[in-house]
Length: 400
Image 1: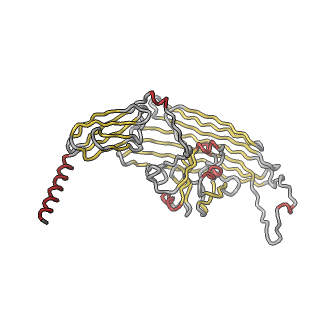
Image 2 (image 1 turned 180 degrees about the vertical axis):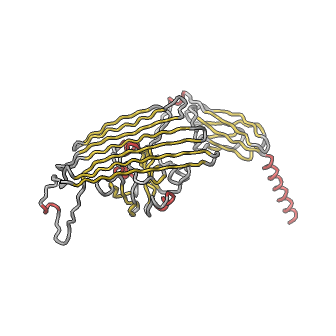
Image 3 (image 1 turned 90 degrees about the vertical axis):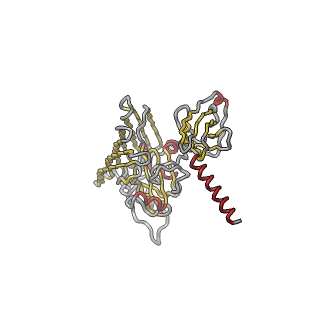
């Protein structure tokens, strides 16, 4: 009996091995009519019970398919159904490309969605140092997008960081005119926003969010991937800047508010040649503001040009610059406390009177230069070279 079971098992294993060796596979990609990947599309092999869904990049695959001719049925709401013939050959992989076409039924559809956040865009190539999707990324992080900053009329980095969970006490650095922003992440004091596009960049000048595509607040020990110079126990903040793209587009904005607040912004993008291999984008912002006291005038100016050049299919070169200047009144601190301290009103001081004056202010100018070269070695390997240079000039003026 034992010998019989042994021979039956060996026979079944041989049949499975023979079937696996003689079978083939099908691999393909599904795109929409505008040549974009079609995700979550159902692909079914007609006449069988085999079905699958495309991934985020539109790819699908069937394994262990017996050699024969098959018909792939592809369907997606709003697009015409497609039947694609494919032939599977033993020990080979059949490749197929399927493009969906829009139908007139699209105009008759009504899509109702609820409970979604239109500002929730968490995909990032910097957080895990790998191109992972949100579901694949185990890191804990929050993303503040440019859309939510525009919605809230955010004009400073500390204002934008109020949207990041786990970040608190975000405020400008000491000195009144500092361009860095200090904050606490998960209860730990964390240096400043000195990480730009995943690279430690010294003093990031962008208190003004005009050139920010998004802000990534990376929490906990996962931030150690960026090096000890940029992180603390709580994490770090990575600023992702706006990059040039292949179409012409421009935007100019003006904002006014109380206490003489005036702000002008500009964002202009244009290709520099017909082949669209040379791209240029510039972001700029100018701002002036008074205070509620008799002296409190402040002004800032920020300009950030960006140039991208596609040398060939493998090499892409990016050159960026950021120039930030600011003038702000000095914030004076006076120690006040002890056992006899009551409240501020007991001092008998006029809160609208400033202890500063025209000759007491802080002025700072910072210039940052960046260069980046991406070279595609193969389909799975890419080499990246970065260069960063920072020149700062902090001048605090004390005179009567």
